[in-house]
Each structure stands twice: as C-alpha cells, then as structure tokens.
Image (cartoon, rainbow, N blue to C red; front, side):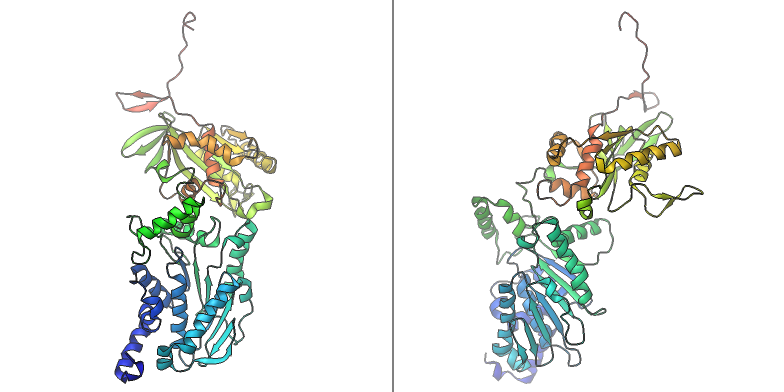
Length: 523
C-alpha cells in the first residue's frame, strides 16, 4: 500500500498501536527485521521490559542471534520518534568493537534518513550532527555510540546525564582473559556507567552472552538465580533463556529449530571446541561433556539436625527417618593477598552416616572477614564482623563436631594462634582442630582425587538452596570462577568417618557402645 494514500484515521491507529507496542512498531516500520520469522513469546517479554520506564536495570542475556541487538535498535528508533517535545532523550550505546559500533549507528541513521514510513509519520528527523559516533535529531534527541565502556565517562554535553545507557555485548573473550580484566569490566559498570545516568529517570540495559564464569554477565545470572532461591529482591531484572529449553524444545522454533541447533553443535564438536556451543547457545561457559561432575552426580536432601545430649549422639531427620551421624568441620580461609578480592573464607559443617553418606549441613561464605572479631572488654560480645575463628568455634559447638580441619599455610598461621588463644580464654579445649597442609600447588587435582570417589558413588548430599556449592561442583575445572566452597567440602570430608553406634531395640534409640575388657587369652 502507498503510505501517502492513507487517511488521517488510519495513520492515528497505526501511531497508537506503534506507540504502545515495541513489536508492533518493529513490524510496521522495520519489516525487513521483524517479518523474517514468527515473533517468539520471549521477544514480547523482552519488549515489555524494554518499554517499562520503571525498570531501571535490565539484563537481557540470550544466545547469539536471538534478537537482542535488533530489539535494541528498534527501541532506540521508537523512543526517538515518540519523544515528548519538552523531554528530549539522551542515549548512549556501547558495542563490543568499533566496527559494530559504527554499523549500529549506520543502521539508526539510515532509517531516520531513508525509511519512508518513518519520514511519513514523523517527518525529517535528521539533525545538525550526523557522525559515526554522535547524532542529534531535529527534535533534540541525541545518541552516542561507543566501542569502549570508559568512553561513557563525561559524555553528557547537554547539561543533563544519560537517560539510557545500553551495554551491548560489551564483554568478550579479549577483555575477560584475566581476573584483573574481569574486575575492570565490573568496576566500569558500577563506577563509571551507573553514576553517569540521570539520578531519578536514568536506565541501564545490558545485552550479552556469558563468556567466563567470573564475567559480569555470568555473575548477574548466578546472583539473580540465588536471589530467587532465597526469595529476595534483586536490583536487576534479568531475562535469560537457553536456546534449548528444559523440555527439549527450541526457544525460537521458527528461526532456530532443533535441526539448526544440532548443526551448530556438530560444527563446534567437529572443530574441537564443543564448549563453544554451550557458551554461545546454552548460557553455559563449560559444556556438560567437559564438566568433571554433572547434575546427576549431586544428591539433594531435606531434613534437620538434632543432638541427643543424654547419649551424646548426633541425628539427622530425613524423610521421617532418624539417622545417626558423625559431624565434622572444614575451613578454607581467604589468605591470598594478591587475589583477595576474589577469595572467600568458607567454614562448612558436614555429617556422615553409618553408610558413609555425606550431608552438607551448613556453611558460611564471606569476603573480607577478619581472623577473629573484636570483643567487648565487659561481656566478651563480638563488636562488628565475626571472624573466621568465631565461625569455627560457633559451628563446631552447634553441630557437636568431632574435629575441624583447617588449611594450614604460612599466610593463615594467625588463625591457629587466635584459635588457641580463644580456646584458652573460653576454656573449650574439647574443640579439636586439625591443621592440614595443602600438599603441593595442584589444588584442583587434590580436590578431585579427594571427592571423585564420593561423587561417583552418589554419596554427597547437599541442600537445594546451597547455590554457591552447587555451582562450584558443576563448573569445577580450570575455568571456574571460585573454588573456595568446594575446597572447604574437601577439607570437611578429609578426616570424616562413619559412626559406630548400637541400637537399643526396646527404647528405639542409638548409643555409643562402651568398650569391654576382653579375656587375656582371647585378646
């Protein structure tokens, strides 16, 4: 249909529909991009979140080629076309490379200059400034396109801060190689990009695919999942899907059917990089095939712990059964000064039943905690943060542990000194602490050899809300972000052993049988 032949009422209907719906705007004004395939449901979810001005931090984390950038381009054009006269928009768009940055800006400029539908409904919006990195529309809207997050700093030249900053695939293999590089990415987002937004109305949007377990994008995925499990609010709205859903169906059947995804998977496998398929399309930096341990190796348990003080026996109540157990503690203190930002101090209590099944009862995982907390001179109460020693003593007594195994390296000798001083002060010499030498620099080989037998036999049981431990088990390997929690599991299990209890059949309780003296002939 010739758009010039449309009457006023038809034009108004089109504008009202396009104003309210990003997908409708795309189909009406950008049909080459939006009518190539059927619009999938997750695109509508993305569009609603993008149009929601109350959504201040939005992360769209999807497989490659699933429409993140196309919807971003469309949303910028839509917002600029419908901008109020008294409230011009000031946006910044950061891409991975200069080539992508220039290409994205060319797309925006082309449609404002040559798209007949846009020109018919909104007139000539080309403004005074029309460069590869900076455009200004005739209605006052302004867009800056950069290939470096740091370029956002100080970019506000219109006496206002940014209304929207979009980080589009700003993380890639080149800038996530080292820990310092990954930390720099996170710092740029929090210390440079976020403060550059308008305080009350500014919005931040991140589009991406995880490229490393310790990348900013992947940390958003894991932190959001943890917040959901803990039933607490998260500062970001995170929209993330895998190319193949849990029921085996494709996320975008009309564009990426299973046949196409299998072709891509075979390409990566035959090219010697099967993990790339999982990284690019399944949101997993490490593939299931390359993982040391898989979901099937983990068992989950529900129940609670109880101590029978009369018989000095620990119990777990699991599915109505009363299971006698021995309890142990493991501790991996954060002591590496060079990587202090990435290290956690972890203290973990575990239980072992008579069949050598191991149950993780509880763990504390903290950054930047002291060796021991400051105590009040009057009542001995902790002032401020608890320290490693405080958690060891607290969990050891709470779960009546037989022993506590603590990593013993030169950097944490202060922990053993503080433990001895505190045991002396509290008169708690029954708390047994075993210093454990790491035994070489091949830490992950040591963890693997210590835990592989238990995992292969399905003897390790964790709680479903132990997200950090579960993540470290499934991502265990050279590319994992943290190994503090799984190393603590190794220390907790190292000196553990099953109980040897006897059962009183009449009164239905377990007890520790006392050793009887044997006849000297038998002995």
